Image (tube, rainbow over all chains, first blue to last red; front, top):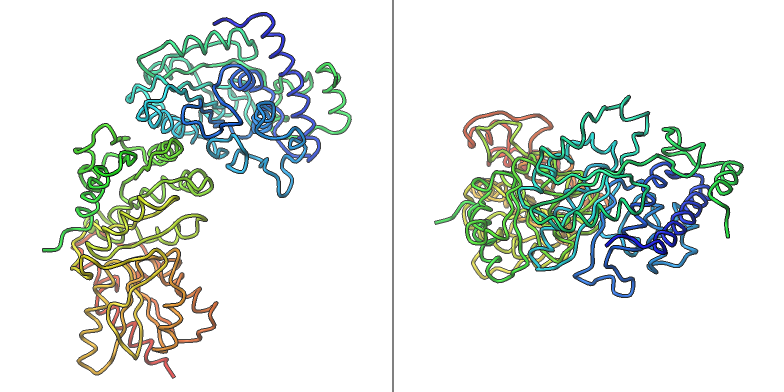
Amino acid sequence: MPLSKAKVTQLSEFCRTFRIDVLKAIHNIQSGHPGGSLSACEILTLLYQERMNIDAKNPGDPNRDRLVLSKGHAAPMLYRNLIEKGFMPKESMSTLRHINSELQGHPSMHTPGVEIPAGPLGQGLAAAQGMALGLRLNGSPARVYVIMGDGEQDEGAIWEAATSAPKFKLNNLTAIIDYNGVQLDGTTEEIMPLRDLSAKWHSFGWNVIECNGHDLRQLNDALDACAKIEDGPSVIIAKTVKGKGVSFMEGKAAWHGKPPSDDELAMAIAELGGEK
Amino acid sequence: MPKAIREVYGSVLAELGASNPDIVVLDADLSGSTKSGIFGKAYPERFFNMGISESNMVATAAGLSTTGKIPFANTFTAFLTTLGLLSIRSLICYGNLNVKLGGAYCGMSDAFDGSTHHATEDIAVMRSLPNMKVLVPADETSTRWATMFAAEHKGPVYLRLSRDVYPDLYPNDAKFECGKGATIREGTDVTVIACGLLVHKAIEAAEILAKKGISVRVVDMYSIKPIDKDLILKCAAETGAIVTAEEHNIYGGLGGAVSEVLAWGGAGVPTEFVGIRDTFTESGPYAQLLAKYGVDANGVISGIEKALSRKK
């Protein structure tokens, strides 16, 4: 179902505040990955705050939808979404990457609501495939989402799972590529050209949908379309901007894993409309 | 008539499949060799052949376990514990997920295929991972137990399995326990602590040395992690010398695990290590390989003699 205007307004406000909260948490510990957290903001927020069937009061529900954040370095945006869903108190966010925290640098089972660890790139698609196979055996209507990076497409393990998921006709599996065009050392074009990514996935047997990964309506329509596909897995290639929402971070590899300074944080918060 | 360890394992998987609908089995295009295909034939809807993609298989097993399934992932352990290692470490062990790893063709049991297909470092790798249990059965009965235990235990388990036929060691009703070893033969002069094939070689060595008046105790350390500290220290105290024996590099495997206990316990007894001496192996008939690389009865005898010569 298309998103209503009121829903877009609500989700956009979530995204705005989540961006600020993520940058504050990374600034607080002076460590973390702002670029990829901001580029995956709309994808994660739409899934967690609107689409996924999950309930913090019943976290073990066998029919809950699952999400694997294969690009685990975007963990802060995942954590902020889990907090909004009630899995943790809001104060947890300031413990990101601190000693004894339930919020590890990359997703782990220490964090309520996290389904499986992630961090070393390339493993999440196969893990999500396993979840989709298990849920189908269980007769569960649940869906599995996996969010990958575009730099992550360099990993051979992605293409092993890309080969097998269509064999198993996993129509309960939706992969989303956060295609921000930038990896740690530079642009994907400079470091490892992806060529025609859509054609690659298509040739592996996936249903491919391309959209703007910051446009909540487009993303939502793409996810609706995936849910209707019955003959196999789908992948959404979501065009995004690394560091989206903060002008001096946008499209810059330098902001892959650099925390903002005090001044930079203040500028970023101002650009994002300030704290309310 | 004893059966090949891989045959026993495949049959037990199929039995488990009958009694527990949550058991699922994966293989990486070697199900005819690992014998996971016995399960696959009986329960095709719960068997996933992942093709030649070990890392994909292990990560898929990790995902399956989060939905309440009990996955057994199988391939030659030379590939399982190398190509599969990233997901074994960072998904299965870090997440303490309920995944079972069937490491087929351990040691040099895939003899003719050569060093690329021999697994001589897997115990060292697997036992260094938090949450992982490491079991090495040495006959049909202990293979049956280890496989059943893996299915019942909640958490990661590594089963080191041979391609080969091992003679029977235990009666059908023998009791095993994760974290325990078993004294197979009593002795007073020295203890050989062995696993897998080398338990049989140690028995052979003990029989030969008995004729020379040397009394050799033989322990089957089928559980390498956790390991039976009490038994190791008791053997050190009672026999005053220890020889470890395994079809594995002398570094980091059973010998390493036993040494850690001996050092921690302040045992201070001469200890010798029978195993592959930090070298790559080669193709050849299995018995000739075992002889050449010092992991047969003669190798155990020479380890015992060295230990005894150092005993005060």
